[in-house]
Picture 1 (cartoon, rainbow, N blue to C red):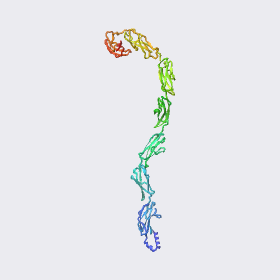
Picture 2: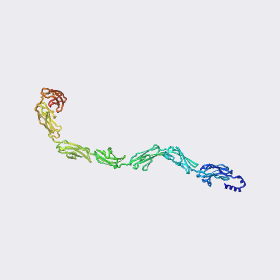
Picture 3: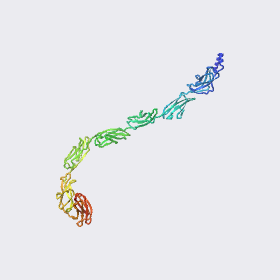
Picture 4: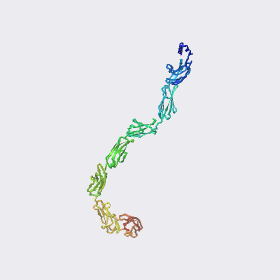
Length: 635
């Protein structure tokens, strides 16, 4: 200022007196004091007041200049100007590119006359906030993390966030984990540097997740089986993505893996993605089980029909169990099953399956069943007599068979119908026949051959009781030897057949001097001769304790209703209890009763319901006396 005024004085020496007269006194400009705007921001607009000592010349321009951050005006920036001649206020704008600094000053200069004021006298803090922006991960999916970043290149800036759900923080870059729908909305950011601040905002969207999928599989599976993965989601329009062991990936909803190795065991993860890009997922564990070793299978094939088929299987894996299936509906759950009496339908392929933890492997075995001959028939001309010829015979419904015979005394033969001449007792026994067709044999059939000895019959006679009286029937007994099981007889009186007397024993009414004999007809297999005649028995009259007229049967003959009476004083010695028996001609008892004899007197009415014929009435007492009478029933 001093130099400026010196320059004015020099000019005055040379100016015309008229000009000098126009400037009445020194004119000066200055910043109004005290100066208070000491904390400013780049791009701020402010009003600066100035004063002048005198009125400036017309057309004068007042300009406000801003120093650099160190207070130097060597490169001052003009921040505002006003055309005026008197004191006023100048609207100024801090340049947007003004660096942040704390040593800025301002001054005012005039143009007419030229003048420069002193600076404002105090340091001015100017802060320059760079452009503020917000980056975020919005839109985000429910339960994801929301990231909000405040982008500002200025140093020393402080930040303040506010947002939905009472959110507030002073951290520049924030992360909100596990966002919910309440975290949606507008987030506001304020960046502050000294007295300067900038604001920005961003709208955050939290998107709906698809529903949690349900997952499944056909696990556990066996080695080389196909794995089927299943996923379902109630949200429409989703896409699916699978990952799993062995770098497995698939974008199908329900993918499959064929011929699975053991290494495909493990966790499989499915992710469903909605149309808004949000994901939900679940997982399923898959087990691929090992297979048992391949078994070996054997049999006793080929077999013949009717034989037993034997199947066997072995496996080197421990802990396995076995199952078989085959032709004709065959199945078994044993390791070594058998089929008894196999038919031709049992031929074919049999499968042996071994199981381990639900996994199985199988091997096939072919079985052949050859037809066995049908059971042959067998016959003979048995029974035979010693010395006869035995003729054996057999037939078979199976063509082309060979016959095989076996029998007693080491007999064998391979003809169909063999014979044995002059058979003996040792040839008796069981003869067997079987046939062969190829390697198969029929069942064995058999027959019993009987060779009987040659015998000669004989017969003798005995009587009961041994003592008889005239006109009294007596039981004759034929004692037969070698007569066979059921020999027939014919009784004779005095060498003449007695008609109808062909039973043994037989009751015959006799007369004194009768000669009784019997002829027997043998039914033995080999009788020589086939008849025999007994000795003759001559009948005599013996003494009796009971006279012939001491007891009576009346009427006789009769129709079956009759009286039996025993009278006192007729020579009887019977007393006590008597037994009445009536016998037919075969000796069978057809009537039996017990009656009391009182002092030698007995009377009994008898009703006999028997066929017409000859019967014997036997009366016996308690001390062994027994008497007989013949009774004839004729109606």
